[in-house]
Length: 238
Image 1 (cartoon, rainbow, N blue to C red):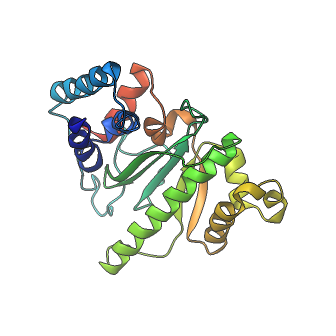
Image 2: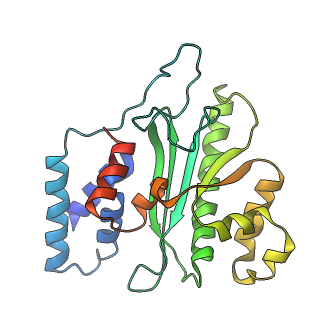
């Protein structure tokens, strides 16, 4: 379907709210059926009806306050303490696809809006929710460090404080923050886990627990009910 290619451009550049739907459609590009054609038309109709939505980046509201993420009606995400220039969220579903592979979702926020996001299905089957979350965290950490380095090259990143990575899986946070005792239970994804542990030791990133109701990356991992979908969409777009 050529329409999926056009929708992918929108999803990758300006419309994070359709990233998951377009990703699911793209999985059936080799042999689309009538159901997939109807689903693609539905996404196009959604885009038309929501054509006035867009990503908004804001200046600080208080005098003297440097640029910080502004995204909720209360002016900040509940986890933002005012000191993080970048906010990174990572999440994953578990065996949500018919192939039992998991879908990872990440989103990075700056100045009130998303500057990077993705919704991708894993190449291998994760054998636990923790493993699926570790895979998503690796993708988020790589993207966040890359963006931080670009900002530093432009003299826009103020210091070397660790990047905050918001995760809603306590087991994944424990594994990333711990040493060899957790690696023994994660031999089948040890390289990914060691990568995260090294970044934590080097103080490049720090993992923080994020309640599921505030985990914006959940928006990119699985279909949500209307209330959650509209709530997360409002956090990302206006």
